[in-house]
Image (cartoon, rainbow, N blue to C red; front, side):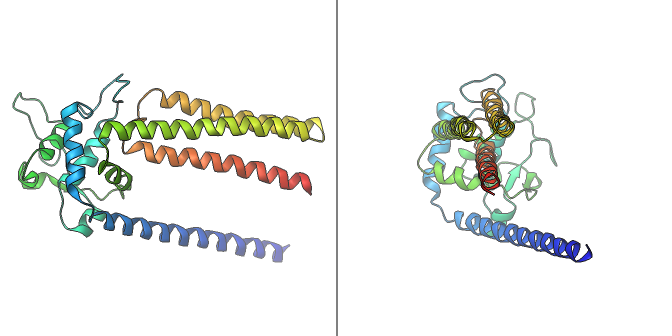
Length: 262
């Protein structure tokens, strides 16, 4: 009993150590990519951001409630754009890109007496020749709370496309992954029920298939609310979650298949 416990404990510790090492290596690889991203040509990105503001794909309001075309969350996209227009040295921008908060440490006000929105700050920076001189020095904040990895796909795509095209691409990819999960689960469920040896196992297969199908349909309904569906910041992370769900569904299928063959 004691030996079995020690063996299980060793395996658990080894698994945790492997997972920790993998997380460290993945973080270092991501930081290296973000550092290399600083060498991207800026002209194309700048032109497409300015074009997006001019055409109305980006507006000066941080939150656009019930806007089916642009989505609700403009705030996150404008923060990402600020990070591009307030450059420092490459390493500093990798780990803590610069942004300007409209309410801290210095409240910023428009000429009409209202507080500046983050999107208005981003627009001013986009069309300014000297964005680092637009606001008080203490307003420029090194935002190192997150890695901000969404900058990588956003800036790569902004070299060739404007914001509206990227948002449509993200939404199409997200819905495609969810539809793929639904279709594959329906087909696997029908196939596994047909091959099940007894009714109890058939019921388990049906329950598992219904779970993943319903989960995908619920997420599709949530995405239809347009809250984060069109965000350059949120959509890539959401797609990774959806892909993880698809992989989990396949792992469950292969696990059941292996057990059935024992």
